[in-house]
Length: 117
Image (spheres, rainbow, N blue to C red):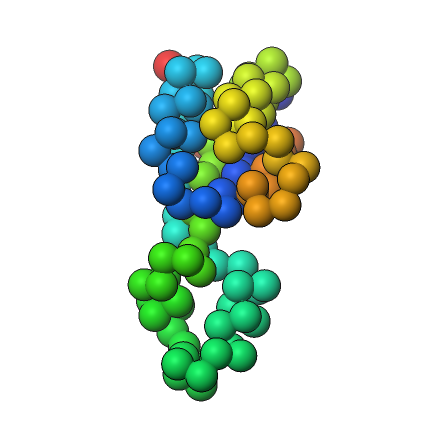
């Protein structure tokens, strides 16, 4: 069976808990969450008067309005990928709309340490 890495860059951190619940209910075997910041948001910050010239990633992360959450999970098969996409859009809305987030899927050639539940 083919494995896929499903990655969601969630633009609205307040929806993180709901997305994780939806992924779990859809059958995701697990998920990892990272705080992240995109280039567009960093560029916006650099133009602000109240930010240091060289802000640290930690300083950026402390400003909630400039952070994203990046969620990723390794899943088996196209059916599970489709379930996670549907679960995500059930929570955040249509991902083709601005500021909802970005979801992409990458085929995984080999996985070591992955346990099928």
